[in-house]
Image 1 (cartoon, rainbow, N blue to C red):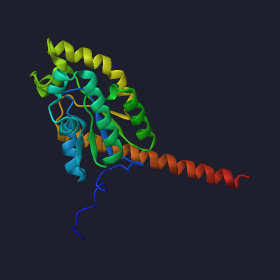
Image 2: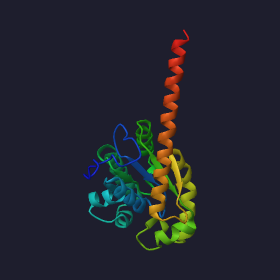
Image 3: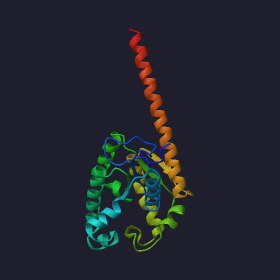
Image 4: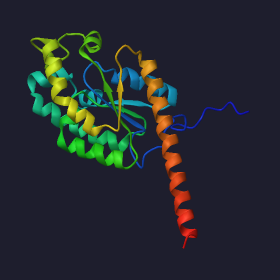
Length: 213
């Protein structure tokens, strides 16, 4: 038996889409996008790309600094450009910043990606589990003031968008990144199996229909 490593993207329990990442992760601050993405990247032998990091690399400064000195509108512009590029260029796992899905063009691009066979996973989380992961420091400019109430308000506003752009939702409460990654893999395998059965049934129906005439 060969012991050579599997070619990149072959380890994932999902067929690669027409173009773009194997999997896109979206969700609020503290849902575990980067940590879950890192685990999946190791398991599937593909790279993780984080649009927050892309924005910081492009701007040459931190997100908190962009908010402070250039404003949220400029950050959202840079963020959309980062997502747009990554959806075309990246073929591994893509983690989106918490508010990236708010941009209407990003919503349209994610919809097109999903139509081409792409998978967008909404990592859902409640405040009780998000709070310890997020931390309540200055690096989270949107959580200034009462961070718990701000997080709830932001999540209430964004939840319908996360649900609209995603093709799969996974609740991460009380789960380690490894457990979340395994649950995503399990659901991808089930979805692939169901799709294969549906295609087989459709072929059988078409074959039988053809013989009936």
